[in-house]
Length: 267
Length: 272
Image (cartoon, rainbow over the protein chains, first blue to last red):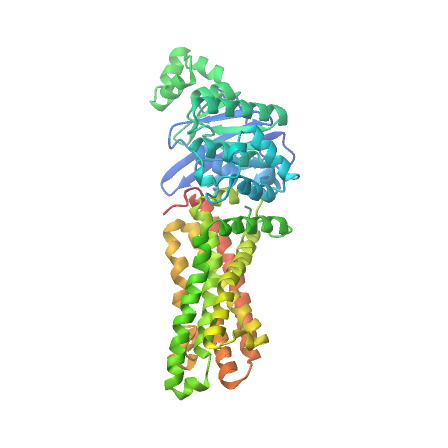
């Protein structure tokens, strides 16, 4: 990590109750010769929204997958809602959820059927009411009895978000949550996520290439490059450090290897 | 999906949710339903007529009436049982839904139990009409086998689940590139399980392999019942013991392959 070392309180990963939603400690993932994630550490307090930024191959998806327990780390440790992953995953999987472009919902099932199945898997109480509420909140009512495979890309994204919120998760992991949405719908989804976080004190970690989205939603940004954390701070502090007015400019500086130079010049 | 949580309770609700998911799928797709009926019906008609022809021309088969068509029906229980299990699993891979399930509270044992129940449901849809066809077209009443049929059925279905669990693990680990194993592995068992002929036909060294497979005991037991009117309890108990070992081994292999899939990240790709 080369950014502001004070930005993330470095976790001391130990057994016991933790106030952090996610604690990542010296996490490494090596695929054969490739070091996809290279010794990263961060801690996310409960109720925060954090953006994970980085170009393709930066290690964002692998990091999120290790937090979810879908990928086993080569070394290092992850704790989610105070529990070690993946060893204690059964204690937390019902309290978290995710949305990712790497997974789909079954195409032949209707939206209502899909939400019913996942609601039952997550032991959602008053499931019909919950589905009706989500359908209203995410504007699914018009196509709730249509097969998932017959929906537009934007509608599918909203359904995936409904699935991610079905169990009212304390921790929400989102990989490109507004990809393929038109600007109006994307803005509306962001507003919904902000509201959800506020109303439920939920923690959200989102990977995104949409810098405006990250600027608007996130109170913290972790920038990754080649598996390492390049910077970690509030969006405002990062932009000030790079002497840039938008995160997109910062992203380009980092992606094109101008990060250190620009940062030094700004000092 | 935590593979390390076997000591905790199994949730009937989550298993029910998965069965509901597959039921929705079956009911939404008439080609899937038709496929369940089509092949078993085709099998029984083809082999039934062959049996009639042979029975009219050979004394042995005239005496052993039903061994051929009985073998076809029992083989289909074995084969369709595994396919019913594996296709439900493949539906998740094809739909790219496996990540959603792995991230849910669903446990591997619950997932596998739901696939087992679905294999029974799919089997019932395909096999019951097949047995009725055999009764009406060829006057072969498989239910006339009585209680031994339950022993045959249980042993065959246990083997089909073991194979289904193992190949599902392989697909989980290696992606859909390994899908062909789902369709072909059972056919490797076909000549060794002595479906249409007694184990004594095989070379002695191959007989050891044949007797390591539970279906061999079932087909030998069926011939003993139909030809000698003897129910070989010893064969069924031996098959049950081997099946128990196979089920435990296949579940262990599934967990190991799942862990390996998590190590190499193939749960995220799921591709070829």
